[in-house]
Length: 384
Image (cartoon, rainbow, N blue to C red; front, top):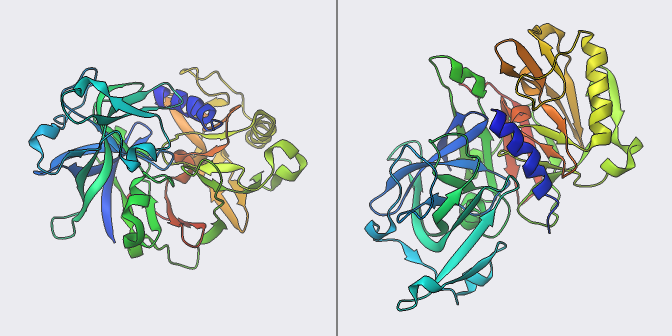
């Protein structure tokens, strides 16, 4: 969890730079999407990330790879793996650095990619087309042929554990899985993130992500806010007008730097919710005033506002005032256990972009309608 907190801070810095369902498992603050790659299919897990475009997995031969539980994908054993030539249009259309793989001088030169994240994690390898399969059962399985993926031969960074093999890019850019699925999903997908703190128990709930018509969010208690498209196209931008702690509201229009269209990114791959320092300082003060208990230092050294063994009924409701959508966050959306005897405010200050992170999104059915440019939220018990 401590590593995931640090990734949240570093990730925000990088933001300043120019019908089926799938099982998603929680993993220390990250959500892992189960899918299969290649022919015959090899099952694997990737971090489900709405803040990334390229879907990549570790591949043999591995010059430098992090530890993973599942077997590493061997492209030589897949009949559907086709590396992209470095002169292809797709190679030059990428919104991340690409080059010619000059190691293969006697063969066709492949398109080498290099993606680096805000925490200095990275993946270097070959761009290729491959078949990806996902679905909750064999009968409902979806097969995506000739999907552009990254085959990573040199990968390192602060990954949470040994369960994931890479990233599943669910962003808005050209190379994301969402964009490559195209009209087949009608611009719709949704997810429901189960609380990851259940992992300390014998029962570990599975989250779900839905594509296409299954991605529609129905019900009377749904709130919807406009989606703003900005550069870079990878990120999903929302407009947050203010935040309330109980009945006390902080209006962003009174803090000019933090107010404006598309002033916050919604991101499944970032754990914490991050605000500009001027917003966070005011928000933290409001939370302190509402709780009225002595604070302690975070044992992990990551978060700023912590309490010893605070009871849930002492934690105020925090409301996110998006345009057209007031989203009420419960205690488990706003505080996180950082040790057996401490709970800390799961919001933080960042000099990078503002981010609505995945702790705040837990137990909401979150639906994206890209064609109509809107995001919807519905309170839901995602463990069920």
